[in-house]
Length: 148
Image (cartoon, rainbow, N blue to C red; front, side, top):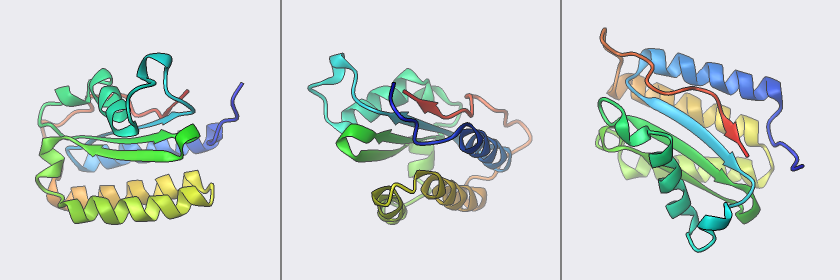
């Protein structure tokens, strides 16, 4: 069995943080930690695997195209930040580049929890400003972190 990078307590904390962000914004956020690609994905690069996961999780089906995925591929030491069109149009590519640099520094130091926690906070703050929730918003996707 593979060693988990996040404890149960850390998983619960991040899930609660996602729920709080989603109460204040239109965003639907998911975190997926994969230890390795599935056999059927062996010819795909990390971005392609993340895009497949984005679709598989139903993140392309949110009401206002506001899905955000943090996808981590541990054995390749890579991660991808994906945002659907509703989020990408209000957050410039510079935001994602800056966030990726910060996450990379945390992940290089095996500081996964704090890197994710800080990144979620940053995403939540800016989306609260740019895509605040409205009265008709509801939680469209589960908030738990997937690790396999």
